[in-house]
Length: 379
Image 1: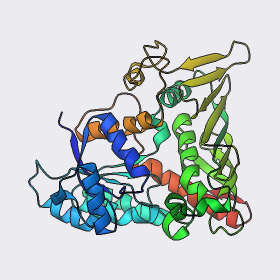
Image 2 (image 1 turned 45 degrees about the vertical axis):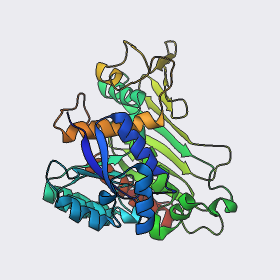
Image 3 (image 1 turned 90 degrees about the vertical axis):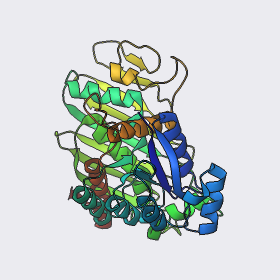
């Protein structure tokens, strides 16, 4: 199978997530970077392309130029997909244009800066028949996929309660914004959208909850706050209801001192409680009332893991895989889909438009609830 040729929008010099996408695509092995519009500044775009070894003729000064000129190239040369790794406010316009130009799209989460813009992307995908993937990274971890299978099997009974948190401390000081490009756009509502920490990492927590339980969040009661001088939430918590009748709590904060990148979830069912933490991603704990606690491990030939989940692990047992490999599993799955390879199991291996629209509605409801004084809001 030939690799999917892709062009990247954003992700040039000084960017974090663009490099993550490129590394993930290389690990996946079924993608090749063929073109780029790596910065909104043409000079920086060209310099970034040179650093990456891109053909100067296919290093463009704007995303519009890239889409127009690539579409004119022969079918076996032009890019086939576009990766969008810009700040949130710059997702919708290039995504819609790429879809209309005949390219599939993989975009960093959240899908857009607002529900309306996310819906516009969804409508463009429906209209053009092109595919869109969103990189909700943590669903790429093998044990997260196995957790979903265990809950779906019904062996633990119904979901009663979920406790999910995503807490960091990298914005806990006023000085954290000084000279920090990544922080600057994330705390600017003009670039991030109306949601801050809830949009940046709360969407990951909500997506992880829905992915593992196989249920949607249907109601939410949220309180979002911010440090003095900030214009957008950097801390928040919520109660929520699930479509299957269970309830839950969600915390998302970037100002909790001492927490580096603490994404953790507990799913309590009738007969067992399942626990996974991103900072120890190769271990999952399952607790029972009348049986010994089980510790599940990823890696190697673990016969208790499903075959297709074993197939996406790359290292021997005891050699940890993490963030980049999980990201790569998403790229690999979407690349396979674009090449017509049918996914094994019960999910495509990447977040779909439907998944991310649910996430955008989660943000809409969280903001509405908080603005009205932490009242219950339906999704």
